[in-house]
Length: 97
Image (cartoon, rainbow, N blue to C red):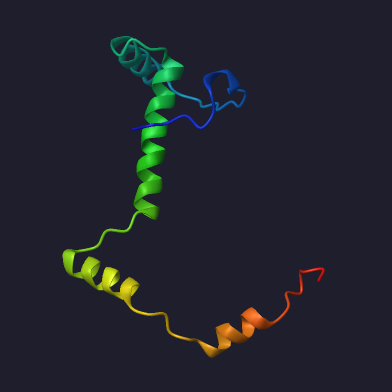
């Protein structure tokens, strides 16, 4: 499932790649079978691949037991951490206040 972050009319950025004649012919043949341009075909393939790569690095998979432990910990009352409490009560060095 791919999604466009911007409307199609806002496409101003470029990606350039070098390919062999055989690679180009293969992409063009596959694009024709998909009823799209070679650029559109490559873009869709790249976006699918990017989504998979990002998901592998950002999605966490838990077993049923791990999920149960995780959700149980969310239901527990928060514990006080003295150092964190002190940090929250200390003025920020980046604040103008």
